[in-house]
Length: 427
Image 1: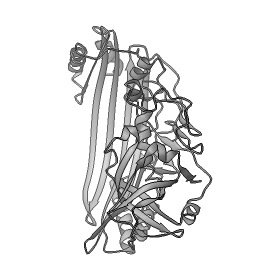
Image 2: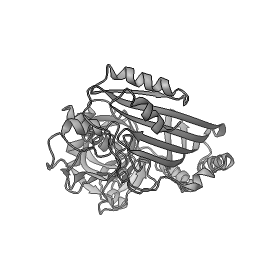
Image 3: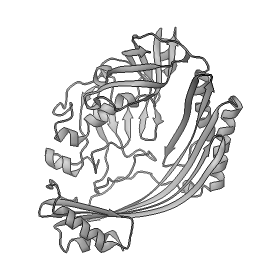
Image 4: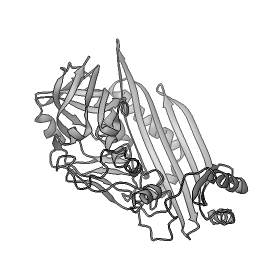
């Protein structure tokens, strides 16, 4: 059975249809408490169908590839109670070239994955044998196929590879969690660099430092920049704009951040975690500037939100979510940021992001891993510390942006960012 066959079956009773098929083969190796815990391999397949009947949308999904008639019947039944449709399935269009498949990933054996995990653990243990460690290595190969009633037929094969090491260090009543990992669509990840970054986080935390409850400069590492971007992910989501929930709706061209700040959604970065040639609705991917020199430029739309807003889909379906977010590099080295900070906080990651009212930009989070900066030096890890503020106020109060962007989490490419003043609360 092909996705075109499924579309033809659905079109006997539907006014429009789109079918997708996904096949994934994966392998995962995990370590826990310094020892190998699991070695797993898996294969999965699924087909999904969206249909339009009398102006209403219905959908269904199954992992049983033989259940062709069932998935069609369920989609048609769902359309009876579906939401009104504000779009048409896109016709054939040229898709961009982007590298998402690395042959080297397919040849990674489980034995090599075990070796990589053991090597990362060994490096961190050599630094400090008291750290209780876990590690993970995974790879996958997937194939996606899509067809619709407008004549679009697409397919794409992609790989994914990731590895990481994390640990727990207990010293009396003090418990420290730290680690580092990275994943994207390419085999090229240096396990020694991953372990070295984890060690650096532990090394900075060898001492603890007290911090005052006061407004002070805060430097976010690339991983920490996520604190500032949650509100923007929600604010630039076209669905939120259409529903009137986004504070950015109708503000194209307005200044919302310091002019040093620019943000782009870029699904065409080779091997990026969110990269692909087209989205889940068969719309070709494209680069979408969201903020240019501090001003609102565009929003992210899928077919439905674009139809409601009278816009074109930006290739961010289904759901108007971002792909790879890219923060433009600045001109200040990270070391200089730290050196020029008399008293401040270096934030690597937090706990509780998303609580409160993230749409408005308000955040109040516990610092999971952060460090005190004193007289231009990182002097130790902070404990029992909270960070509070508003994303939009913070972005208007940028003191510096780093000159070197790094991948953080596989879908965020950003340099470190220094905010001139945020509220730090020590308990």
